[in-house]
Length: 97
Image (tube, rainbow, N blue to C red):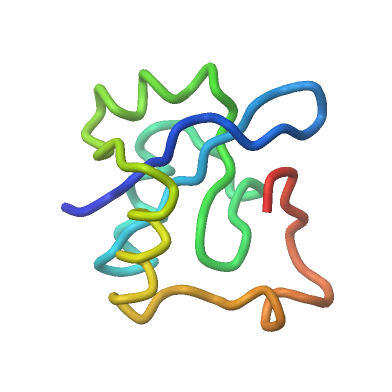
């Protein structure tokens, strides 16, 4: 399993948010999120936005804490990164990007 989470530092809606990704597959990411009560509406094309209050629980459940740059690097290296230009249009909104 290679589910990664960056520190909660992205402000939106009066909270700080983390990004939860997999550097293996979106299927792995969705399974981890579902198993840990992360709603599908939190998925934004290549990651889940999760509020800071869930950070410690997700790390305890097995998400690997990494700096934001490392998260993006590994997501890109796995071929799972969706550039911002590809994220425009209808879909689930992202509070944190």
